[in-house]
Image (cartoon, rainbow, N blue to C red; front, side, top):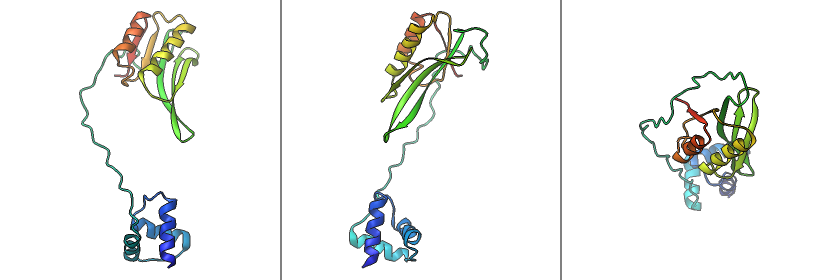
Length: 173
């Protein structure tokens, strides 16, 4: 019964995510055999093979924006001197089947990366440590630090750190 073997092979290769209709297409694509979807359905039922059902992601209603600081930068990304305008953000980098998070601070005067940190978790600690590294390397008093309105950049602890070092926060608005 070669049909059952093909179904089991497909189920194993795709980690059990295909239902009977996609298994039928997989058999056609890989073996060139045309199989009726009802036959595939019956054989899958006999073999006890089922597709994993994906969970639906919950839909969140957009809430009220939490604007912590006004947009002082106002899309003027040109700086006439160093340590005038900095920008910061977090990005994720695929690494060995998981993700690492890169937080960086860049000076808009010469596009130099002042500080960066890499972490396994995208959390407030990553952002705080990146800002502290930048403060150690440069005189940050009066710097306009531009960021998005992510939860790390709107947190109380982040704003307290900026205030303590006389850095002006400037999230997107």
